[in-house]
Length: 450
Image (tube, rainbow, N blue to C red; front, side):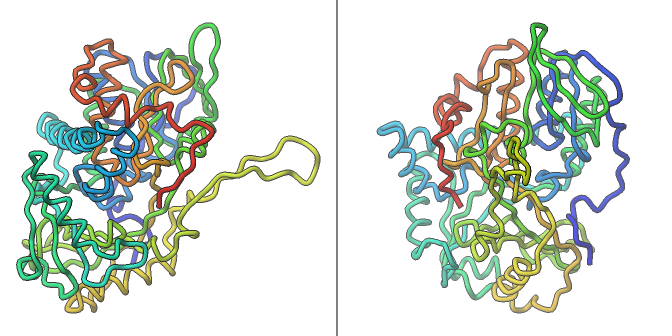
């Protein structure tokens, strides 16, 4: 068994680190789906772009998630409507609908990039299932079926093609005795996230971007000539910076410490099975558990991917930032906890029990890979998209587990802005300016999310 991501278990030759000084139009910090997509869009518009990644392309959360392409925020649609209505009054329902429409636009943009650059990344659009368990797990709604039915009606009223499946219909698809019902979103999909992002990076290199891997950024300074991005091997002068670091943003910009909190998610894959057990991706217990079957063979079969368990280990899986004072007088040392990707025995055992309970006929399957990944949860569940308090420094982060739902469309919006193009998407979606405001929260933000 390998204690690292299944997605990253493939040959790869990284680019050389930065050595020396450069001058470009835009520096992108972070080599995940946000940073690489943004760099590609900017390069398509003729900008000179440098991408700085502290490890290898797609080695962070991009290469450690479930490979889901889901619409909307992490909560039930009914819950999103209620929360946005509390925040924005009568506009809440419309903003909730826009949040889903943006995610559908994001999906179409990703599919378009795959086609345009011939990226082979095991992409399928078999839909998703939001599952109500007969015995809800810790931290889940006590009556998830009620929430699913409410969401089903609201989504239909708002024009989304969704279906409700009862227990009998769901058993025919899923073959598990623990499921009470589900909401099916037929427009959702799945992919191999590392193949996808490294395919984007190859396309971007073909358009002339400079990609420097194993290049951590140590600081961003501003002077009369613009911005200077510092790294151990060199410096890059630029006028614009795009932070595509998600959970790691506070390590470079401390103003986001209370706004973006790291949360570790843990996953495993089984050994391959030769038959196709089910298609699509599955969310259960309010998203605390998720699973899918991969398309890696043999034949029509593939491994099963299963993740979750954080709700049983909240304190261990949620990170935080704090100041630690030195033993000698001087400035306190800023310390970050919660960025470890190593899987833990406790959470993996929880996931094993959940998997074996949901799939008793598959309980004897061996495990091929176990891993963890660090997600960036915003204090109010919505991402930050736009220019930060530092002029010229832009952010796309705080996806709360939905990076594949928003990163591409957000990167498109920011690249259009930096290239001086008409803000077509921003005009189409008011949510971007109101709900995704990069300046919201500030020092008074309190992370109330799981």
